[in-house]
Each structure stands twice: as structure tokens, then as C-alpha cells.
Image (cartoon, rainbow, N blue to C red; front, side):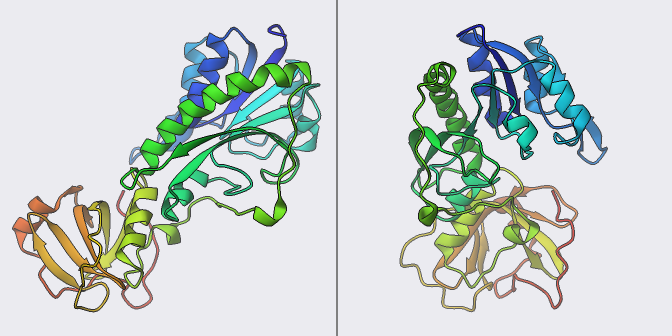
Length: 326
């Protein structure tokens, strides 16, 4: 079955190890489908996706349809006569015309233990919710959002200080290994199909600006998990003197440390960090970014003396979400 035609669909760094693993194992990857190039940075430089960069390095044809369901995109894909389609964080829903195209179906490398955390941000939201275990599920794709029958799973522990960037990297390797263990059965028709329990299903929608906003009435541990799930990008933010104030890094909260002040109140600014009262405990930021400035350690930020004990962080009246400092 090594000569079966495979089309790979993926976009971010998470998908690159899976593509590379298929090639290294000798599978016949006929083409790669990824999202269109996007403008990045202040200069809006058109930038290819990580999967496109890897595909070009491997000498593979690359398709970048703006809408996969467009008839011309479906026709272009069909010309490669795929026997199996493999997706990993592609970023578009596959229409029925594509799902029914390959004779061995479409399988997806999903970054959670389904049926938990269906959707586009499973890794970030697992961390934000304080989960200690996540994993990868390889599943047959269906018309619903990550609702298809499951084929295989692999677990991964989440450490108390692990952030989304680190878990993404680890899970991408776990997913590539599991994919290689699963593809042979998919290609010979012996892959198991385990229906998902709908009663256990949870969802992880793509991150919004509201997910980045810090609510200081929450416990310090929950805010710390929020920050971990948003690291290394896009980070979390609050407001200080009416301007967006980004928080990039923090120390793990100390259990039982009482704040003794209203949530959002600055209770200390110094070399050890920026201590802020929360709804339960104290949150200590160690790297921040004031509006219009670069990110810097709190030990450096504290030297200018602009933020003082007793200042309040939080939403000003009718605070706009706007574009935070990146």
C-alpha cells in the first residue's frame, strides 16, 4: 500500500512533523494543501505557512485554495486521485465532495483526547482549563466538527508550568508517531472505528480577543493557566491607566497567599515581579508590555517607577477590546 496516493492537508508548525514522517516513511504524498499566504507583522509581509515551507523543501506540489469547497479547488484536488487524505490542523472544514473523494477516506490528527476539546483550539483551551493530561486522537473525518469515528489515541501529560508552545511542540511529535502507526491499517481497511460518546463531548472554539482579557476576580491559579494557554502568543492583557497592558510571563502562584486587597490592585512592584491581587490569591507577573513599548522583565519595568503600589489594573469604563500591543 506504500504506492497509494496520499494528499496531506495542514497549516501550522503542529502539522509539519506529520508531513515529514509520511515522507520519511516512504509514503507517496502526491500533493500538500495548506492555507493561503498571510500578511504578517507591522509591514504586513506575505508569509507562507510552515507546512508550505516544508512541502516546498521536500519538492511537493502545494495547493492553497482560499475556499476548499469551491468547485475549481475540488477539481484541482481530484486530479491527484487521492486514495487517502491526511489532515492535521488544516484550518478549513472539508466539504462532502472532498470527504467522499479518497477510497480509504480522510483521517485527521487532532490535538486532544476526543470527544473532549473538539474544535480549533484544543491545546490552548486544555491548558487554560487547568488540564493535566491531553493527547492526540486520529479519527475518520465526518461532516460535523471533529465528530468522526476514532481510530487511535496517545496521551501526553501537561506539567504545571508547561505553556501552549511547549505542548504544541510535544504533541506534534506524538501525533506524527501515532499517524505512522495508524496509516497502514487505514490503507488496508482494517483500522478500527470507535464512535464518539456525544454525552462526553466538549468544544474548544478558536481564541477570541475576549479570551485574552484578564478578569482579576478569578483565582490567581486560573489566571496563570490562562496565561500559559496564551503563551507564547497572543498573550494576555489588562488595562492600566486606560491603556492596554500586556502580560507575557508570570510565576506559578503560591498556594494560600492572601492578597488583602481588591482584585486588580497592585500590591507590589519590584525585582521579583509585579504582584496583583486576584479573587483568590496573588498573581505575580514577571514580563510585561506597556502600551507603545516593547516587552520587558518586570525587574526592568519597575525601575521607571510609573506603576506604584495601590494602582488598579482592569477594564476602564466601556473599555474597547481593540488591537492590543503585540
